[in-house]
View 1 (tube, rainbow, N blue to C red):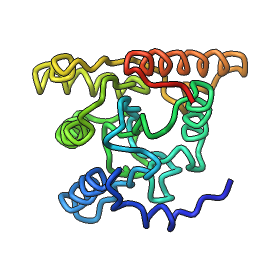
View 2 (view 1 turned 30 degrees about the vertical axis):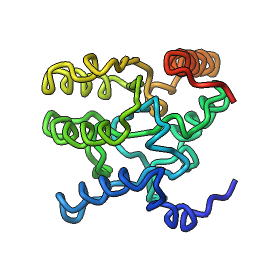
View 3 (view 1 turned 180 degrees about the horizontal axis):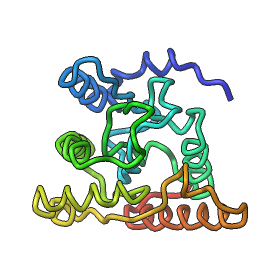
View 4 (view 1 turned 120 degrees about the vertical axis):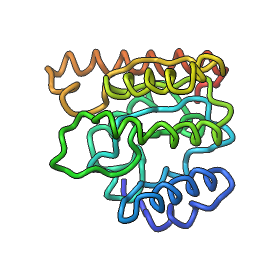
Length: 205
């Protein structure tokens, strides 16, 4: 499937994603020279009930977008999950604990400073997506980031009735296992999304 990224760029100011686009712009302004990939406009900030939280932008975001149409294994898995869970992408939105693109030679784990830098952006992101009822943390770093978020903002997720789910990362080492094990991991991820959908009252496609 060939994606016209210019066509997507033209949609970034549409009401369903404009505030998130603005947040990405502001984050880039705060760190001159940095890149924060935009969120694919198939997502919808008024409809979003589930946040798919990953660690940091991967190789596929050279498209300029965080998108399940990107050319990398994590994106392909996200697509599989949406299809298998029959989840319409407008009800979910991806975000990164550290939303800026990192140097390729940095260790894959986030350092404390990076996690700290990501706290306020995530808080702003949740204010925009005010109907979120679940955050799915993909990978250990995303989970520890959420623990730090809860400590920093005194359990604001819990108090807002947002349930946190822990899931495996969608790419990298987590899936460097046998094919049977990969299927099993994927099925577990699908179950998590289905549970989050049920909690949010999202209809299957």
